Amino acid sequence: MDLHIALDPRRKVGSLEDALRDAARDGVLAAGIRLPASRTLAADLGIARNSVAEVYARLVGEGWFEARVGAGTWVRARPTTTPAITPAAAVDRSTRFDLDLRGGIPDGSMFPRSAWADAVRRALSDAPADALGYGAPEGVAALRERLAEYLARTRGVIATPAGVVVTHGFGGLLGLVARALAAGGARRIAVEAYGHASHRMLLTAAGIETVALPIDERGVRVDRLAALDVAAVLLTPAHQFPTGVPLARDRRSTLAEWATRTGGIVIEDDYDGEFRFDGRSIGAFQPLAPQHTVYGGTASKALSPALGLGWGVVPEALHEGVLAARAQTGTATDALSQLALAAFIHAGAYDRSVRSLRLRYRARRERFEAFVDRHLPGARVVGLAAGIQCLLELPPGVTEAEAVAEASARGLRIGGLAEYAADASTAASRRPALVVGIGAPPEHRFEQAMAALAAAVDAARR
Ligand SMILES: Cc1ncc(COP(=O)(O)O)c(C=O)c1O
Image (cartoon, rainbow, N blue to C red; front, side, top):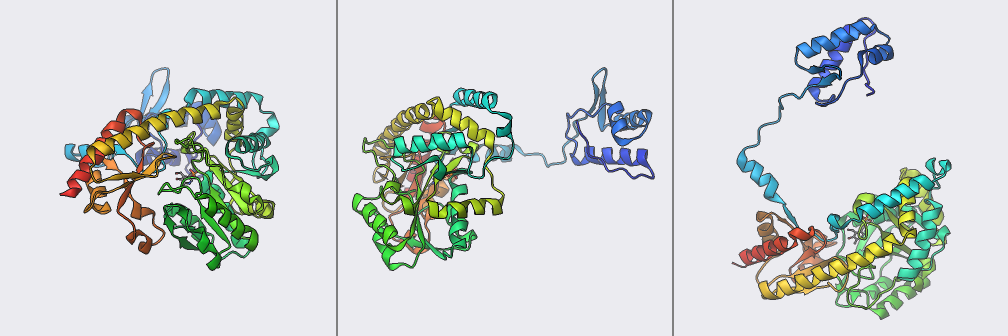
Protein backbone atom coordinates (compact mmCIF):
# COMPACT_ATOMS: atom_id res chain seq x y z
CA MET A 1 0.00 0.00 0.00
CA ASP A 2 1.20 3.49 -0.88
CA LEU A 3 0.77 6.06 1.90
CA HIS A 4 0.92 9.80 1.52
CA ILE A 5 2.33 11.27 4.70
CA ALA A 6 3.74 14.78 5.12
CA LEU A 7 6.47 14.68 7.75
CA ASP A 8 7.84 17.59 9.72
CA PRO A 9 11.59 17.39 8.91
CA ARG A 10 12.44 18.61 12.46
CA ARG A 11 10.54 15.79 14.19
CA LYS A 12 10.13 13.05 11.65
CA VAL A 13 9.21 10.20 13.99
CA GLY A 14 6.82 12.25 16.13
CA SER A 15 5.05 13.64 13.11
CA LEU A 16 4.75 10.17 11.56
CA GLU A 17 3.04 8.97 14.73
CA ASP A 18 0.65 11.96 14.75
CA ALA A 19 -0.14 11.58 11.06
CA LEU A 20 -0.92 7.86 11.36
CA ARG A 21 -3.07 8.36 14.45
CA ASP A 22 -5.02 11.19 12.79
CA ALA A 23 -5.49 9.14 9.63
CA ALA A 24 -6.84 6.18 11.62
CA ARG A 25 -9.10 8.40 13.72
CA ASP A 26 -10.51 10.32 10.75
CA GLY A 27 -11.09 7.20 8.67
CA VAL A 28 -8.52 8.24 6.04
CA LEU A 29 -7.03 4.84 6.81
CA ALA A 30 -10.07 2.60 6.67
CA ALA A 31 -10.51 -0.25 9.10
CA GLY A 32 -9.18 -3.52 7.69
CA ILE A 33 -6.39 -1.93 5.65
CA ARG A 34 -2.97 -3.52 5.95
CA LEU A 35 -0.19 -1.01 6.63
CA PRO A 36 3.07 -1.10 4.71
CA ALA A 37 5.80 -3.23 6.24
CA SER A 38 7.92 -1.12 8.58
CA ARG A 39 10.97 -1.74 6.38
CA THR A 40 9.17 -0.37 3.30
CA LEU A 41 7.73 2.69 5.02
CA ALA A 42 11.08 3.45 6.65
CA ALA A 43 12.82 3.34 3.26
CA ASP A 44 10.11 5.54 1.67
CA LEU A 45 10.36 8.16 4.41
CA GLY A 46 14.10 8.03 4.98
CA ILE A 47 13.93 7.11 8.67
CA ALA A 48 15.19 4.13 10.65
CA ARG A 49 13.18 0.95 10.47
CA ASN A 50 13.17 0.59 14.24
CA SER A 51 11.57 4.03 14.61
CA VAL A 52 8.68 2.99 12.34
CA ALA A 53 8.29 -0.30 14.22
CA GLU A 54 8.10 1.63 17.48
CA VAL A 55 5.45 4.00 16.12
CA TYR A 56 3.40 0.99 14.95
CA ALA A 57 3.78 -0.62 18.38
CA ARG A 58 2.59 2.53 20.16
CA LEU A 59 -0.46 2.80 17.92
CA VAL A 60 -1.21 -0.88 18.49
CA GLY A 61 -1.02 -0.13 22.21
CA GLU A 62 -3.51 2.72 21.82
CA GLY A 63 -5.90 0.46 19.94
CA TRP A 64 -5.68 2.15 16.54
CA PHE A 65 -3.76 -0.67 14.88
CA GLU A 66 -3.64 -4.38 15.33
CA ALA A 67 -0.55 -6.61 14.93
CA ARG A 68 -1.22 -10.03 13.42
CA VAL A 69 1.55 -12.54 13.89
CA GLY A 70 3.30 -13.19 10.59
CA ALA A 71 0.77 -11.05 8.71
CA GLY A 72 1.81 -7.47 9.47
CA THR A 73 0.03 -4.50 11.01
CA TRP A 74 -3.59 -3.63 10.25
CA VAL A 75 -5.92 -0.75 10.90
CA ARG A 76 -8.36 -1.86 13.58
CA ALA A 77 -12.12 -1.44 13.30
CA ARG A 78 -13.22 1.44 15.55
CA PRO A 79 -16.49 2.01 17.27
CA THR A 80 -18.48 4.09 14.83
CA THR A 81 -19.27 7.69 15.68
CA THR A 82 -22.38 7.81 13.48
CA PRO A 83 -25.60 7.76 15.50
CA ALA A 84 -27.15 4.37 16.02
CA ILE A 85 -30.07 3.62 13.74
CA THR A 86 -33.24 2.93 15.67
CA PRO A 87 -35.24 -0.11 14.50
CA ALA A 88 -37.97 2.19 13.16
CA ALA A 89 -35.51 4.26 11.15
CA ALA A 90 -33.83 1.11 9.91
CA VAL A 91 -37.10 -0.28 8.61
CA ASP A 92 -37.96 3.07 7.08
CA ARG A 93 -34.63 3.25 5.31
CA SER A 94 -34.69 -0.22 3.90
CA THR A 95 -38.30 -0.17 2.85
CA ARG A 96 -38.50 3.42 1.73
CA PHE A 97 -37.80 2.77 -1.93
CA ASP A 98 -37.71 -0.96 -2.19
CA LEU A 99 -39.66 -0.94 -5.40
CA ASP A 100 -39.00 1.07 -8.51
CA LEU A 101 -41.19 1.87 -11.51
CA ARG A 102 -39.45 5.04 -12.69
CA GLY A 103 -39.31 5.68 -16.41
CA GLY A 104 -36.21 5.17 -18.50
CA ILE A 105 -34.42 2.64 -16.29
CA PRO A 106 -33.49 -0.80 -17.65
CA ASP A 107 -33.50 -3.93 -15.51
CA GLY A 108 -29.90 -4.35 -14.36
CA SER A 109 -30.51 -8.01 -13.58
CA MET A 110 -30.84 -8.65 -17.33
CA PHE A 111 -27.34 -7.36 -18.09
CA PRO A 112 -25.52 -10.04 -20.12
CA ARG A 113 -22.66 -10.33 -17.67
CA SER A 114 -20.80 -13.26 -19.11
CA ALA A 115 -21.07 -12.09 -22.73
CA TRP A 116 -19.79 -8.66 -21.65
CA ALA A 117 -16.95 -10.24 -19.66
CA ASP A 118 -15.99 -12.25 -22.78
CA ALA A 119 -15.97 -9.06 -24.85
CA VAL A 120 -13.80 -7.25 -22.28
CA ARG A 121 -11.36 -10.17 -22.21
CA ARG A 122 -11.22 -10.35 -25.99
CA ALA A 123 -10.80 -6.59 -26.34
CA LEU A 124 -7.95 -6.57 -23.83
CA SER A 125 -6.09 -9.48 -25.34
CA ASP A 126 -6.45 -8.19 -28.91
CA ALA A 127 -5.67 -4.51 -28.24
CA PRO A 128 -2.24 -3.42 -29.47
CA ALA A 129 -0.22 -1.39 -26.93
CA ASP A 130 -0.93 1.89 -28.70
CA ALA A 131 -4.67 1.38 -28.18
CA LEU A 132 -3.95 1.92 -24.48
CA GLY A 133 -2.56 5.42 -24.97
CA TYR A 134 -4.53 8.65 -25.55
CA GLY A 135 -7.05 7.83 -28.24
CA ALA A 136 -8.67 9.82 -31.02
CA PRO A 137 -11.17 12.40 -29.68
CA GLU A 138 -13.96 11.01 -31.85
CA GLY A 139 -13.55 7.55 -30.32
CA VAL A 140 -11.93 4.22 -31.09
CA ALA A 141 -11.94 3.45 -34.84
CA ALA A 142 -13.03 -0.18 -34.41
CA LEU A 143 -16.14 0.88 -32.49
CA ARG A 144 -17.04 3.65 -34.93
CA GLU A 145 -16.91 1.09 -37.74
CA ARG A 146 -19.12 -1.35 -35.85
CA LEU A 147 -21.60 1.37 -34.92
CA ALA A 148 -21.85 2.75 -38.47
CA GLU A 149 -22.67 -0.74 -39.69
CA TYR A 150 -25.07 -1.51 -36.82
CA LEU A 151 -27.01 1.76 -37.08
CA ALA A 152 -27.38 1.48 -40.86
CA ARG A 153 -28.60 -2.11 -40.56
CA THR A 154 -30.98 -1.77 -37.63
CA ARG A 155 -32.15 1.87 -37.73
CA GLY A 156 -31.63 2.87 -41.38
CA VAL A 157 -29.20 5.61 -40.34
CA ILE A 158 -26.90 6.97 -43.06
CA ALA A 159 -23.52 6.76 -41.41
CA THR A 160 -19.83 6.34 -42.17
CA PRO A 161 -17.31 5.59 -39.42
CA ALA A 162 -15.86 9.09 -39.95
CA GLY A 163 -19.16 10.68 -38.94
CA VAL A 164 -19.57 8.68 -35.72
CA VAL A 165 -18.48 10.23 -32.41
CA VAL A 166 -18.44 8.08 -29.28
CA THR A 167 -19.61 9.88 -26.16
CA HIS A 168 -20.44 9.41 -22.51
CA GLY A 169 -24.03 8.34 -23.10
CA PHE A 170 -26.60 10.38 -24.98
CA GLY A 171 -26.28 13.07 -22.32
CA GLY A 172 -22.59 13.42 -23.17
CA LEU A 173 -23.40 13.86 -26.84
CA LEU A 174 -26.09 16.44 -26.12
CA GLY A 175 -23.73 18.50 -23.97
CA LEU A 176 -21.13 18.58 -26.75
CA VAL A 177 -23.66 19.40 -29.47
CA ALA A 178 -25.16 22.20 -27.35
CA ARG A 179 -21.74 23.80 -26.91
CA ALA A 180 -20.93 23.41 -30.60
CA LEU A 181 -24.23 25.05 -31.56
CA ALA A 182 -23.77 27.85 -29.05
CA ALA A 183 -20.24 28.49 -30.36
CA GLY A 184 -21.78 28.78 -33.83
CA GLY A 185 -24.20 31.47 -32.61
CA ALA A 186 -27.28 29.43 -31.60
CA ARG A 187 -29.32 31.14 -28.88
CA ARG A 188 -32.58 29.17 -28.79
CA ILE A 189 -33.43 25.48 -29.22
CA ALA A 190 -36.89 23.92 -29.34
CA VAL A 191 -37.57 20.99 -27.03
CA GLU A 192 -40.56 18.71 -26.55
CA ALA A 193 -43.15 19.87 -24.02
CA TYR A 194 -42.24 16.77 -21.99
CA GLY A 195 -38.77 15.32 -21.62
CA HIS A 196 -35.84 14.94 -19.26
CA ALA A 197 -35.16 18.05 -17.20
CA SER A 198 -31.49 17.00 -17.25
CA HIS A 199 -31.42 17.30 -21.04
CA ARG A 200 -32.94 20.77 -20.94
CA MET A 201 -30.39 21.64 -18.28
CA LEU A 202 -27.52 20.60 -20.58
CA LEU A 203 -28.82 23.06 -23.17
CA THR A 204 -29.28 25.85 -20.64
CA ALA A 205 -25.79 25.23 -19.25
CA ALA A 206 -24.40 25.87 -22.74
CA GLY A 207 -26.10 29.28 -22.71
CA ILE A 208 -29.07 28.24 -24.84
CA GLU A 209 -32.69 29.12 -24.14
CA THR A 210 -35.22 26.30 -24.56
CA VAL A 211 -38.65 26.78 -26.17
CA ALA A 212 -41.28 24.05 -25.67
CA LEU A 213 -43.22 22.49 -28.55
CA PRO A 214 -46.62 20.97 -27.73
CA ILE A 215 -47.29 17.24 -28.16
CA ASP A 216 -50.55 15.71 -29.37
CA GLU A 217 -51.60 12.17 -30.31
CA ARG A 218 -49.52 12.32 -33.52
CA GLY A 219 -46.35 13.42 -31.81
CA VAL A 220 -44.59 16.74 -31.45
CA ARG A 221 -46.07 19.76 -33.25
CA VAL A 222 -43.07 20.31 -35.51
CA ASP A 223 -45.25 22.51 -37.75
CA ARG A 224 -44.77 25.21 -35.07
CA LEU A 225 -41.01 25.33 -35.73
CA ALA A 226 -41.45 27.63 -38.72
CA ALA A 227 -42.83 30.36 -36.48
CA LEU A 228 -40.08 30.07 -33.87
CA ASP A 229 -36.69 31.61 -34.15
CA VAL A 230 -34.72 28.49 -33.15
CA ALA A 231 -31.42 27.10 -34.40
CA ALA A 232 -32.24 23.48 -33.59
CA VAL A 233 -34.80 21.11 -32.11
CA LEU A 234 -34.21 18.25 -29.67
CA LEU A 235 -36.70 15.39 -29.98
CA THR A 236 -37.42 11.67 -29.58
CA PRO A 237 -39.16 10.80 -32.89
CA ALA A 238 -39.37 7.00 -32.57
CA HIS A 239 -41.02 7.00 -29.14
CA GLN A 240 -41.63 10.33 -27.48
CA PHE A 241 -40.18 10.36 -23.98
CA PRO A 242 -42.13 9.98 -21.79
CA THR A 243 -45.56 10.15 -23.48
CA GLY A 244 -44.77 7.27 -25.88
CA VAL A 245 -46.23 8.64 -29.15
CA PRO A 246 -44.19 8.21 -32.32
CA LEU A 247 -43.83 11.20 -34.66
CA ALA A 248 -46.39 10.80 -37.48
CA ARG A 249 -45.05 10.27 -41.00
CA ASP A 250 -46.23 13.63 -42.39
CA ARG A 251 -44.69 15.41 -39.42
CA ARG A 252 -41.37 13.75 -40.19
CA SER A 253 -41.58 15.26 -43.68
CA THR A 254 -42.48 18.66 -42.20
CA LEU A 255 -39.48 18.40 -39.89
CA ALA A 256 -37.13 17.47 -42.75
CA GLU A 257 -38.45 20.38 -44.84
CA TRP A 258 -37.94 22.82 -41.97
CA ALA A 259 -34.35 21.65 -41.44
CA THR A 260 -33.45 21.78 -45.14
CA ARG A 261 -35.13 25.13 -45.74
CA THR A 262 -33.78 26.94 -42.69
CA GLY A 263 -30.50 25.12 -42.06
CA GLY A 264 -31.89 24.19 -38.63
CA ILE A 265 -30.42 21.19 -36.82
CA VAL A 266 -32.49 18.23 -35.65
CA ILE A 267 -31.05 16.49 -32.60
CA GLU A 268 -32.62 13.04 -32.72
CA ASP A 269 -32.59 11.17 -29.40
CA ASP A 270 -33.09 7.55 -30.51
CA TYR A 271 -32.78 6.22 -26.96
CA ASP A 272 -34.93 3.09 -27.34
CA GLY A 273 -35.59 2.77 -31.07
CA GLU A 274 -34.68 -0.93 -31.01
CA PHE A 275 -37.50 -1.78 -28.62
CA ARG A 276 -40.62 -1.73 -30.77
CA PHE A 277 -43.22 -4.34 -29.81
CA ASP A 278 -46.05 -3.98 -32.29
CA GLY A 279 -44.25 -5.11 -35.44
CA ARG A 280 -44.23 -1.57 -36.89
CA SER A 281 -40.59 -0.83 -37.33
CA ILE A 282 -40.14 2.91 -37.03
CA GLY A 283 -36.77 3.78 -38.46
CA ALA A 284 -34.65 6.74 -37.51
CA PHE A 285 -35.57 10.22 -38.75
CA GLN A 286 -31.96 10.99 -39.71
CA PRO A 287 -32.04 9.55 -43.29
CA LEU A 288 -34.67 12.18 -44.22
CA ALA A 289 -32.21 15.01 -43.59
CA PRO A 290 -28.74 13.57 -42.89
CA GLN A 291 -26.91 16.87 -43.45
CA HIS A 292 -29.05 18.55 -40.80
CA THR A 293 -29.47 15.83 -38.19
CA VAL A 294 -27.38 14.81 -35.23
CA TYR A 295 -28.48 11.23 -34.60
CA GLY A 296 -27.87 10.10 -31.01
CA GLY A 297 -28.04 6.67 -29.43
CA THR A 298 -27.03 4.98 -26.20
CA ALA A 299 -26.00 1.65 -24.73
CA SER A 300 -27.91 2.58 -21.57
CA LYS A 301 -31.06 0.62 -22.55
CA ALA A 302 -29.78 -2.45 -24.40
CA LEU A 303 -26.86 -2.88 -22.00
CA SER A 304 -26.59 -0.61 -18.98
CA PRO A 305 -26.25 3.03 -17.93
CA ALA A 306 -23.32 1.80 -15.83
CA LEU A 307 -21.21 1.57 -19.00
CA GLY A 308 -21.69 5.25 -19.82
CA LEU A 309 -21.51 4.66 -23.57
CA GLY A 310 -23.38 6.56 -26.24
CA TRP A 311 -22.79 7.72 -29.79
CA GLY A 312 -23.67 10.36 -32.29
CA VAL A 313 -23.75 10.43 -36.06
CA VAL A 314 -22.77 14.04 -36.52
CA PRO A 315 -23.19 15.96 -39.79
CA GLU A 316 -20.03 17.38 -41.31
CA ALA A 317 -20.96 20.98 -40.51
CA LEU A 318 -20.95 20.26 -36.76
CA HIS A 319 -18.20 17.65 -36.54
CA GLU A 320 -15.34 20.01 -35.80
CA GLY A 321 -17.42 22.00 -33.32
CA VAL A 322 -18.33 18.84 -31.41
CA LEU A 323 -14.69 17.77 -31.17
CA ALA A 324 -13.69 21.28 -30.09
CA ALA A 325 -16.33 21.13 -27.34
CA ARG A 326 -14.91 17.82 -26.25
CA ALA A 327 -11.43 19.32 -25.98
CA GLN A 328 -12.80 22.26 -23.95
CA THR A 329 -14.67 20.03 -21.54
CA GLY A 330 -12.06 17.29 -21.15
CA THR A 331 -14.66 14.60 -21.66
CA ALA A 332 -13.05 11.64 -23.38
CA THR A 333 -14.76 8.24 -23.34
CA ASP A 334 -12.65 5.43 -21.96
CA ALA A 335 -11.01 3.41 -24.70
CA LEU A 336 -11.21 -0.02 -23.04
CA SER A 337 -15.00 0.12 -22.77
CA GLN A 338 -15.17 1.23 -26.38
CA LEU A 339 -13.00 -1.70 -27.48
CA ALA A 340 -15.18 -4.04 -25.44
CA LEU A 341 -18.36 -2.69 -27.05
CA ALA A 342 -16.78 -3.09 -30.49
CA ALA A 343 -15.97 -6.72 -29.69
CA PHE A 344 -19.46 -7.22 -28.23
CA ILE A 345 -21.18 -5.92 -31.37
CA HIS A 346 -18.78 -7.84 -33.62
CA ALA A 347 -19.59 -11.11 -31.86
CA GLY A 348 -23.32 -10.52 -32.48
CA ALA A 349 -23.89 -10.20 -28.73
CA TYR A 350 -25.48 -6.72 -28.98
CA ASP A 351 -28.07 -8.00 -31.44
CA ARG A 352 -28.73 -11.02 -29.24
CA SER A 353 -29.08 -8.83 -26.18
CA VAL A 354 -31.58 -6.51 -27.92
CA ARG A 355 -33.62 -9.46 -29.18
CA SER A 356 -33.73 -11.16 -25.84
CA LEU A 357 -34.61 -7.93 -24.00
CA ARG A 358 -37.33 -7.17 -26.53
CA LEU A 359 -39.00 -10.50 -25.76
CA ARG A 360 -38.71 -10.04 -22.02
CA TYR A 361 -39.93 -6.44 -22.01
CA ARG A 362 -42.76 -7.38 -24.34
CA ALA A 363 -43.90 -10.01 -21.84
CA ARG A 364 -43.80 -7.40 -19.09
CA ARG A 365 -45.74 -4.98 -21.19
CA GLU A 366 -48.48 -7.56 -21.67
CA ARG A 367 -48.55 -8.32 -17.97
CA PHE A 368 -48.73 -4.65 -17.11
CA GLU A 369 -51.61 -3.97 -19.50
CA ALA A 370 -53.53 -6.99 -18.22
CA PHE A 371 -52.86 -5.92 -14.64
CA VAL A 372 -54.16 -2.39 -15.20
CA ASP A 373 -57.24 -3.78 -16.95
CA ARG A 374 -58.04 -5.96 -13.96
CA HIS A 375 -56.96 -3.92 -11.01
CA LEU A 376 -57.09 -0.27 -11.98
CA PRO A 377 -60.53 0.58 -13.31
CA GLY A 378 -60.67 4.05 -14.81
CA ALA A 379 -56.92 4.13 -15.50
CA ARG A 380 -55.48 3.85 -19.01
CA VAL A 381 -52.10 2.75 -20.38
CA VAL A 382 -50.75 4.96 -23.18
CA GLY A 383 -47.62 4.71 -25.30
CA LEU A 384 -46.42 1.21 -24.62
CA ALA A 385 -46.11 0.06 -28.23
CA ALA A 386 -42.39 0.55 -27.84
CA GLY A 387 -39.71 1.06 -25.25
CA ILE A 388 -39.70 0.43 -21.56
CA GLN A 389 -41.86 3.23 -20.28
CA CYS A 390 -45.43 4.38 -20.73
CA LEU A 391 -48.01 6.67 -19.23
CA LEU A 392 -50.61 5.46 -16.80
CA GLU A 393 -53.42 7.98 -17.08
CA LEU A 394 -55.01 8.16 -13.65
CA PRO A 395 -58.69 7.50 -12.89
CA PRO A 396 -60.84 10.64 -12.69
CA GLY A 397 -60.34 12.57 -9.45
CA VAL A 398 -56.85 11.18 -8.70
CA THR A 399 -54.03 13.70 -8.84
CA GLU A 400 -50.41 12.91 -9.71
CA ALA A 401 -49.12 14.32 -6.44
CA GLU A 402 -51.47 12.13 -4.37
CA ALA A 403 -50.66 8.99 -6.35
CA VAL A 404 -46.91 9.64 -6.09
CA ALA A 405 -47.17 10.30 -2.34
CA GLU A 406 -49.19 7.11 -1.76
CA ALA A 407 -46.66 5.16 -3.84
CA SER A 408 -43.76 6.54 -1.75
CA ALA A 409 -45.57 5.51 1.41
CA ARG A 410 -45.56 1.97 0.00
CA GLY A 411 -41.86 2.01 -0.85
CA LEU A 412 -42.52 2.50 -4.56
CA ARG A 413 -40.50 5.02 -6.50
CA ILE A 414 -42.39 6.53 -9.41
CA GLY A 415 -42.85 9.96 -10.99
CA GLY A 416 -45.77 12.01 -12.23
CA LEU A 417 -45.89 13.32 -15.79
CA ALA A 418 -45.70 16.94 -14.58
CA GLU A 419 -42.13 16.28 -13.37
CA TYR A 420 -41.11 16.01 -17.02
CA ALA A 421 -42.90 19.15 -18.23
CA ALA A 422 -40.81 21.86 -19.86
CA ASP A 423 -43.05 24.49 -18.27
CA ALA A 424 -46.00 24.58 -15.88
CA SER A 425 -48.56 25.58 -18.51
CA THR A 426 -47.99 22.39 -20.55
CA ALA A 427 -48.46 20.27 -17.46
CA ALA A 428 -51.76 21.92 -16.60
CA SER A 429 -53.34 21.00 -19.92
CA ARG A 430 -52.95 17.22 -19.71
CA ARG A 431 -54.82 14.47 -17.96
CA PRO A 432 -52.90 13.52 -14.79
CA ALA A 433 -50.66 10.51 -15.40
CA LEU A 434 -47.76 8.59 -13.91
CA VAL A 435 -44.70 7.73 -15.98
CA VAL A 436 -44.30 3.99 -15.51
CA GLY A 437 -40.99 2.31 -16.28
CA ILE A 438 -41.65 -1.38 -16.79
CA GLY A 439 -37.91 -2.02 -17.03
CA ALA A 440 -36.90 -0.64 -13.66
CA PRO A 441 -37.67 -3.53 -11.27
CA PRO A 442 -35.89 -6.86 -11.49
CA GLU A 443 -38.16 -9.72 -12.60
CA HIS A 444 -38.84 -11.03 -9.09
CA ARG A 445 -40.10 -7.62 -7.92
CA PHE A 446 -42.23 -6.70 -10.91
CA GLU A 447 -45.44 -8.22 -9.57
CA GLN A 448 -44.94 -6.62 -6.18
CA ALA A 449 -44.23 -3.23 -7.79
CA MET A 450 -47.46 -3.41 -9.80
CA ALA A 451 -49.42 -4.39 -6.70
CA ALA A 452 -47.97 -1.41 -4.79
CA LEU A 453 -48.91 0.85 -7.70
CA ALA A 454 -52.51 -0.40 -7.68
CA ALA A 455 -52.73 0.04 -3.90
CA ALA A 456 -51.32 3.57 -4.17
CA VAL A 457 -53.78 4.64 -6.89
CA ASP A 458 -56.64 3.11 -4.91
CA ALA A 459 -55.64 4.95 -1.76
CA ALA A 460 -55.35 8.22 -3.72
CA ARG A 461 -58.92 7.65 -5.02
CA ARG A 462 -60.42 7.95 -1.57
C1 LIG B 1 -35.25 10.11 -23.39
C2 LIG B 1 -33.94 9.51 -23.08
N1 LIG B 1 -32.88 9.83 -23.80
C3 LIG B 1 -31.66 9.31 -23.57
C4 LIG B 1 -31.47 8.41 -22.55
C5 LIG B 1 -30.13 7.81 -22.34
O1 LIG B 1 -29.30 8.67 -21.74
P1 LIG B 1 -27.80 8.25 -21.44
O2 LIG B 1 -27.24 7.61 -22.67
O3 LIG B 1 -27.16 9.57 -21.14
O4 LIG B 1 -27.83 7.29 -20.30
C6 LIG B 1 -32.52 8.06 -21.74
C7 LIG B 1 -32.32 7.16 -20.60
O5 LIG B 1 -32.99 7.17 -19.63
C8 LIG B 1 -33.79 8.62 -22.02
O6 LIG B 1 -34.85 8.29 -21.26
